[in-house]
Length: 113
Length: 115
Image (cartoon, rainbow over all chains, first blue to last red):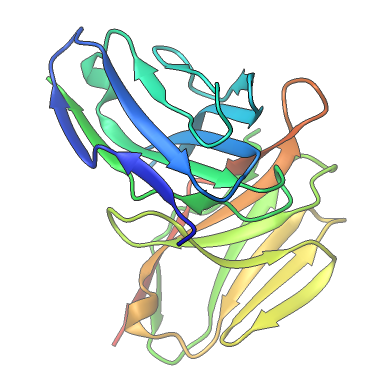
């Protein structure tokens, strides 16, 4: 089954404790992207990747890191989480950037206390 | 100016009516336009996409694109309570570098269909 898999679904952590949210897709998609969603602010792009080893900042990259060492994986790293990073996070992928629809993971609800 | 703008709503329509959702975008070079539906706490799901000027119909949904005026709309005919959700407009725009494209979302319009 074609899918984007995010883990974990829920995560509660404390300020400053490094964490990684994993994202994997099995559709051989070139484009992958991370979004965060907060009430009233819609989906805001954190980072995106056009292919292996090619990544770029989105609209809200501060406090986040990503890597794209393999085509299928695009982990999101929070090296020192803060409470303002409490949010709902989505990973998404598509075959051709901007030309084909995005496939979304199920989301990760992160709480930083 | 935001790259993609939508009225946040809520837009309330009675059951059976036509719901009209609008979206404007700033990049004249944008060529791909998507509508996603999102239920609270769930991931967005694709409703329709459109590339060319004019209308595209799929069941009860019609997407309309006007590139000259830089807007795209979604019409939902015979609205049902199950259509109550947030509708996200997404547009491809030029990425920061390298000639790539990226997808940018509007903040979404919340639709409420009243039984």
